[in-house]
Length: 252
Image 1 (cartoon, rainbow, N blue to C red):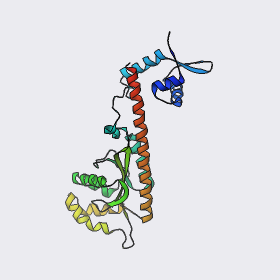
Image 2: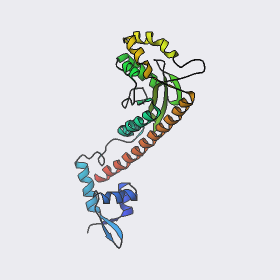
Image 3: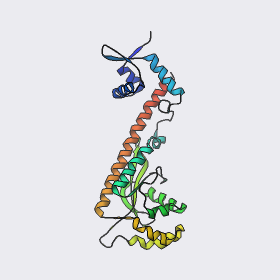
Image 4: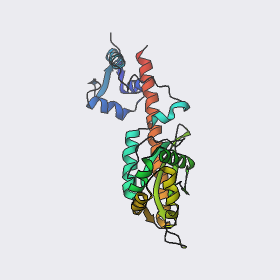
């Protein structure tokens, strides 16, 4: 006789919560029936369902990626990260990018200005920007190779740093000047990157000038965004662990 599973037993088997079970029932991924008002599930059907998902190569149920410190970065949902950082960039009127710990971009650069687009069009410019992004982590502002300000905040998943989100391409007006002092380095920058100085000067006005108060807000919100990415990554890491368990159960 086919064994029947209660909702609680199915939760333990699949390593998911009760709400997820009901959601899977609602969208047709699971089938069951009620006995005395309580849901019951056929163990034979559940095991066959798991086996079918594995054989089809379903990435969710048959995930074979081992969960551990070595692959925590892979838990980051980069499509979501890219969308959220884009909203952050537009809201703060800065450029944002999420990078690996070595500074290499994991996402595109959101809201990049024309001045920095010229720099990023060169190999040496991209290398220097990556080196600048690598420098940050604690949410404090620092000066990049082009003389602009950058703020980076660390993303942690599985109890370890895996990436950083950087906000950049702006300058701050100080009490001693108008905030345009950085442009005195344009001749050197153009020569080192092999770019026409006139083009860089023309695009310099696309770099945003902010107050010190705005800088403090940027630092604060960027840390919050990085914290959100950390939570998303941790939730996904936990989900992968559960799905791994499902894949293992399906092999029994």
